[in-house]
Image (cartoon, rainbow, N blue to C red; front, side):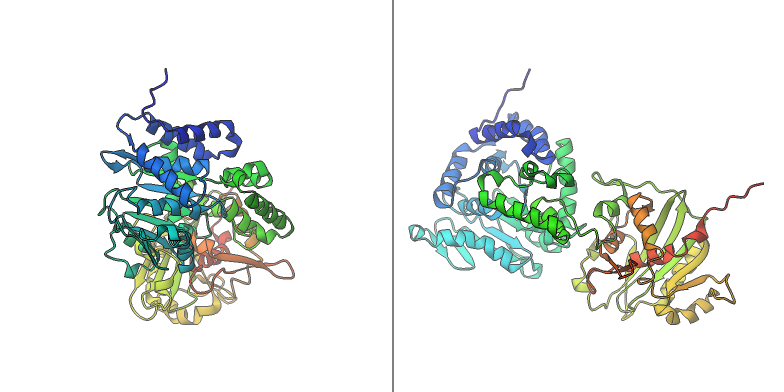
Length: 555
């Protein structure tokens, strides 16, 4: 026997019928949304659906902006559901492909919140984007409507601020430069294109101001992007669990549109999964087809197509060390649920230490390489110079230090990273493992030579092949020897980083180039702000991996 439906709404019923009639157009995330969030919500007897205000909203938006698509009306309905006079869903996540009208979805609703039809005074709306032009473009959708003659006497309109004269509710746009935004009291926060955010510092300033005004709400409107391990990836991980379990105490409404698999890029019918406006916007359908055909001829265009049109992040496989999923596998047994990868205890076993010390004013990395069966286990440590000229702009969430997955680096005082600290680390690891070699580039060796000698650490040479420190000249360029093996190990999931966010970052920041002879070389995707020191230390260690092969003795 089916449960009695407590909440009824024609637009919700219409969309549910649509999804049932077109299952091939509805991706896994939307199917789970319906099954585990929407249907249980409709059956609740404690939910109040403010249908009257919802109807006013639809009428206002369609009369003053443009007709709304069925899925937009569907999402809008859940905005007006309450429990004990608090929005049931306080945070909406809407992710869809580029060109689907994200601004056209959110701006009419935001503008409605300002009006007496909604009926909350001083309900301010903040539009926030990482770049000023993006925030401004979203704001201009409302600006172009509210400056019309019919709104004279109802709104005060400037190019920076729209104010409803009766309610006092303001609509404004901001960049994400957080230092200037303390003290705001928004009722509604719109975070536009959150994929571009490197960390939560900027977001937190705006989110912390919510809750001071009746009916607080937040809308995250975005495509996918190229920043990995940032806020968007964290949010999507959390959403996956919410959709899978239906447990949603934080009140998220995740409307996520994406392909279910990369192979679906070749199936135009599947493109609806990432583009819910596709059937209503012929121009969009034409443009996606053009982008697809262009990517067939120009493979360098494929990452943009996959990431922005289909919400499956990708980069040119020809230019990256390995795929993002392969990087995640270095840390997790289950990359969707973020289940930590099981790791054998290899202390006391054969090991390689490796160092990367490219800039004494910046980053330095070292690590321990051990082997368990066919799996290579890498545990790194990073030193970061507090006085680095790039520290404030560095594209990694350093402020997360001490949290899980952010424990294997430290920020050191002074103008440079002290070599003594790295030598002490080496000696500590030599006491924990049976160290066979310490591998490093010749580039900075002269700075270490005296310190190694003071610690009693010998240098490998023709005269002393048993020396502990092995020097490799220009490791980045000498990778023809080791790059194919590293590529294979990534593909087979045989590299284990442990729970290290910074190692994922280092690896994702490393590009592979090929010379005219077909030899592969490693380098930085971005020279200054996206470091790869930890990965280059790992590469240095791999040059000596044969030294830690388990010896089988037959008797």
